[in-house]
Amino acid sequence: LNEARDAPVPEKKDEQAEYEANIEKLKKALEVATANANIARANMVAGAEAANAFNIMGAAQEALNEARDAPVPEKKDEQAEYEANIEKLKKALEVATANANIARANMVAGAEAANAFNIMGAAQEALNEARD
Image (cartoon, rainbow, N blue to C red; front, side, top):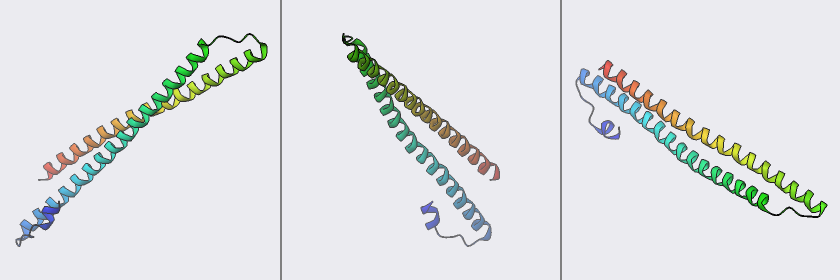
């Protein structure tokens, strides 16, 4: 786009129209490329967030498994605390699983958005070619 803008403007009227049309096509191509780059950046972030969410979910599952594998205390008050800790860990695992599922959905949505922008770019290109 910068190179096209820096080129000398043709003197003939019909060549000027073609020059302007080419500038507009390049602007549209830059818009689509920028949108794709922004989606790619968002997908990278979503992927990192999903990986983190799944790591947290795995840690919560591991903590719950370790708590369940621990010997059940013999004293009544200690048993109540043991059960309460198990319930807290179950809730933490539920939250972590929900976050991981949201992160997964965000990754899928990002991929679908990238596909939609690629289709839009192809449609724009086809329209430009048809106009030519």
